[in-house]
Length: 188
Image (cartoon, rainbow, N blue to C red; front, side, top):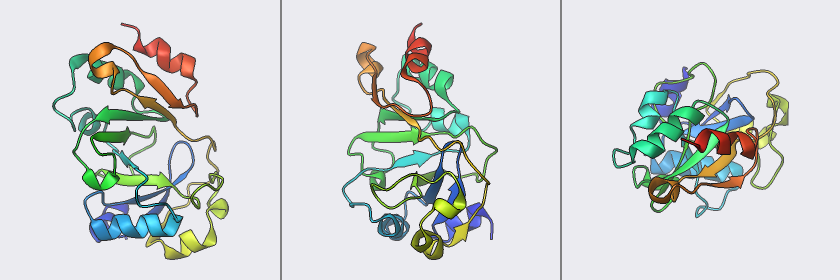
């Protein structure tokens, strides 16, 4: 079964990203999202990000974004960042007006956007090797892809909601991309 076939069938995939191992499912399938959250033990009210394997698709997902925000997104993507933008596009991701958006710097695994989260128990350490993904998650997933050892540092989360209109960004979580790099790319 391919990545896209598994996602289309409502399955959950364990996959290698450019940072750590992740879990992916159809962001518009209530059953698939519920399964992903249950595998992780993640509270259902905690938002997840949507990952795109096509940069252009990610840059055009929310037509209401300003040119300024799109330019910064284009500078940061693909890469080890998760960008928070104003959007109601994927309500099952739980952002209530905010979309966590990610484009990993890897060869595309699939052609469709996926809801994604790290492949660890909620609050547990991130997995840089497949063996570090909890056995219960690997056993419960519908497809498991081994990508060898990964860098092991989660993505940097950058809030662009105020950047959209006022030019302010906030680094919510420092991860694989240093804050100084993010800020240097934000200058026009």
